[in-house]
Image 1: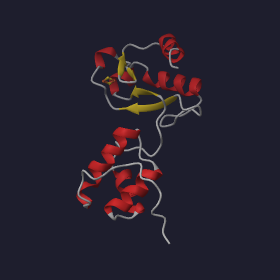
Image 2: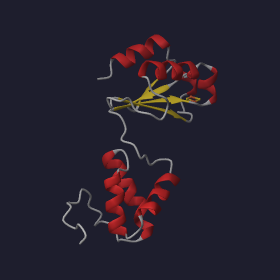
Image 3: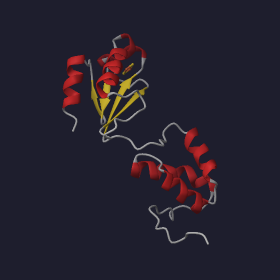
Length: 152
Ligand code: FES
């Protein structure tokens, strides 16, 4: 007997259960949860009739999809040339040391995720970082410390 009594967390009824709609449904999940959980993959697999491994392949292909739950706050350090020249590497190293994580990771308490991103389009303000969608320019190590202290 299979277990059809498990309640569903997601509603994909807006989509015809066709493979071409999978990416849009994945985007909905990502928008809702911030990542693609195992539960989401299971339900997508059941709804679209696509194997879980096929879904994992699609998720891996698109950089915008994440497998891990993001932290409450996300710090993005620009890896563009202007920011690199003006010390973004030192900012990243300081963040990794103070948070105890590497880029792409989330602190154990789930508070902060750390990412590196392509040019933010704020090169005149290099080095720039983004904290929860807010851009900070000409960031110094002292300012970085204040930003970290303000995250709760
Ligand atoms: S290189 Fe960092 S904002 Fe452009």
